[in-house]
Image (cartoon, rainbow, N blue to C red; front, top):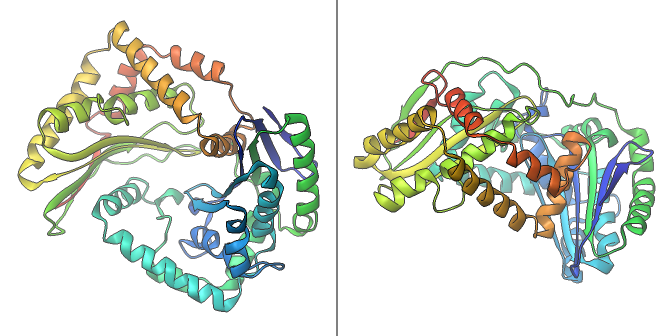
Length: 414
């Protein structure tokens, strides 16, 4: 793997793979939390409308460009990033890369196309509200981060999206899409030194005019700000649904809190990760049959994090589910794991990471996130060493920090 910074200030990373396909991604360090002064949801709206035309290509040409090569073009928005990525045959990676840069640097946001896409986004907001399992989490996160930039929902609201104009979109891109906040990554079966040279040439060619004209918005610092204190809340909303949708959660370590973030990630996986033997799944679903599904997720941001337990159940099972969850959380606070238990959990986590790293797309996206956040990519050996350094005492201390009565909040849709 090779990585570095171009003379324009844009970071990059390349990695050789043995696959017939290549993966490219352009990760831009601006998301929902960076919308101050703009209508909520503009970052997500930019992601949608970049595809509606550039100085060189119409929306129809963009949509068909990679299709003709048998490739795929996608994008997504988070609270802290906009990501454009493509998958193509390895001989076509430059075509995909040129398109990603063109979308990010030459989008024109034509009025007619914007109105078409506005309708798509408004429908997405409505459909999202119709999904209580997603809506309850979104609202919970908003309550947990009330008064903080992370409070804003990624999609925005119907009212805020209707206020967005093409001029706002153009200014948002000019302010936020600066080289210091962008990372380009490629995973392809090409010799890495050769690939690196080609990437640097591409960055210089595609970015020269745009980067010199950007408004150079100040870059968000890669250091955690002081997290705002919050008071635990417990809210119930009568949605008159057959199914109960619930979230229990709290603020958690930020992206830059080491080693706490890895300890929290392991604890979340033990509690309700993807494995069927997670504590919550084993007790509430497999043994009791009380829930349709239950999981524990951990999301890390630059200055905060959120750990959330989400589940759906029939109304008569709500109280027993809540009591069972709290019982498991108390046990984690009071009884440390044995060395053998922790050894098994470490192996499980390392196995999950190894399997996920086999995906070229996941690898490419992860490289972009790592370069944007830390300016480097940890080797598998470094990651393994950090995981093996986690102790039973560290997990117990994290459980006591997260699951104290004055830390844990809840939101329930009935």
